[in-house]
Image 1 (cartoon, rainbow, N blue to C red):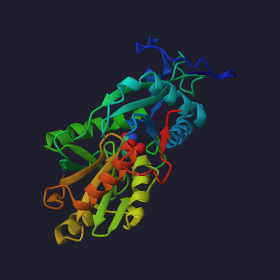
Image 2: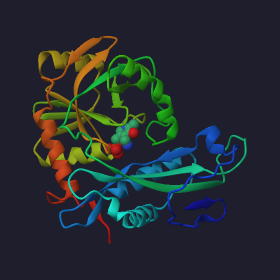
Image 3: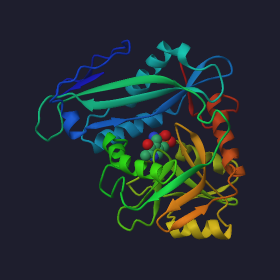
Length: 322
Ligand code: PMP
């Protein structure tokens, strides 16, 4: 779907996957006015297909567009576009279970010119790809590197938007994590490099027995849809859930004295991933006994059961294809 100044949204098309032709002076290539989303369509037990919370992706996409000075795509148009693509690609939605059809809606400036200002033309596109189970061999805890040298986003920046530039800014730290032998980066706040924000592409949760806490939305971390969904599910299951500030020292000390029982990360791609060990400039430590925690696995099952249709969708989160 195209957007042009004065004309608005027009030319919705469903076309076979193909390369896009881009002018070398396309503004996106220079100034990174680009945003995206990630969503999944799951096969349901009766053979139908449903998308998990596309309305939330649509709303976050609008918020990202506002932050990047881009036009907002109406929620209904975003969902209708997802529906049209998934209907067309229905055969590519895996047969059952946690494998899914991953949807990647994105928007970028298409105007040609080298002036730094909001563009007057954009293209909204959705591509899709089947995604297998994230942990085909069973859920395995990840190791994380607490990055103090670089920040992903700062207050007033674009961290709460799903903007391409945030990910570009994160790559050097991801390489550093790999050098340290870690799977993922954990980002800290920009000012004090003390407060836990989020992981590379996932939000974090800290489990203290029956109490579950997630870093509050500071404006520099992404408001994850999985994060918000788990808050509801955890409450449904009787856990005491809160948002707050968790420091690196809190994490290390509560892991050492055993009050912190589990840590997990959550996002569309992996749903839930246990965090098993931490490396940082302030020392290394383990969380739990190296196996996925009980609360982590219980929440993972509860969410996946809703997504795959094994449990009742009490919150009305699944969007069936009409
Ligand atoms: N944080 C970042 C930086 C992400 O890229 C993602 C993935 N979209 C998340 C958190 C998790 O968000 P969601 O649950 O909506 O996938």
